[in-house]
Length: 272
Image 1 (cartoon, rainbow, N blue to C red):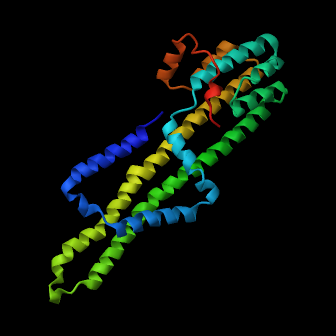
Image 2 (spheres, rainbow, N blue to C red):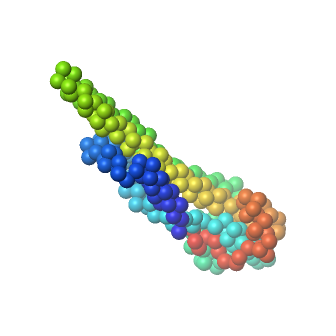
Image 3 (tube, rainbow, N blue to C red):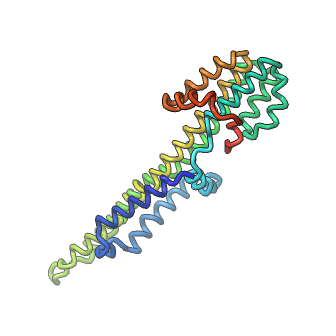
């Protein structure tokens, strides 16, 4: 479970409240400003995306807290094991092994090479699927990036509304200028809300979703290279070296020092 997103948000709010001071927190609570900023942002997002994409927001939240479900090291171990079986008994021997693979993408790649499809055709099909997945994930992150851009804008709209109302009601001859500071402060609260929503909530969520996407892209690219290597008859040791090179240096060292990595199919942990 990855709690870094919620932890960061909580820490951010705690530090802001600490800087404001508990005794002054009431100065930053204004129902009308909340309605303009949050309501306007939500309305803009709903207007920008089809309901089919907005319905995935719950899934996005689950992805944030679930952590990285894609383990490249486990995928490499499984691919090398399959490569050894294919080198010894032929690609048809992988058919029985494929039944144990739960990840549809991984399983599809193995079945394609069992059917003796050309390597370039296999690569093309799998990479097209990766591209489609990347586009879906990009659209998902785009929801929160859109919200992150709208929140400050509606905060500014709220500020303008407050300033206009303040100027309209101001009468210097009657001494109403005494309340000018209070009215100005109320008008500025909406900008404060917009900045908080954008920089502490929406933009961090979008960034985390893109990180999760990059993790899945790496996992799937390793599968593609492993599957193509098997079909081309690569030596399992050479294939292992090739796949490990996709990992960061620290992860490479850790994996190679663990006697080939832990056994078991990494695809079994993959979610989609």
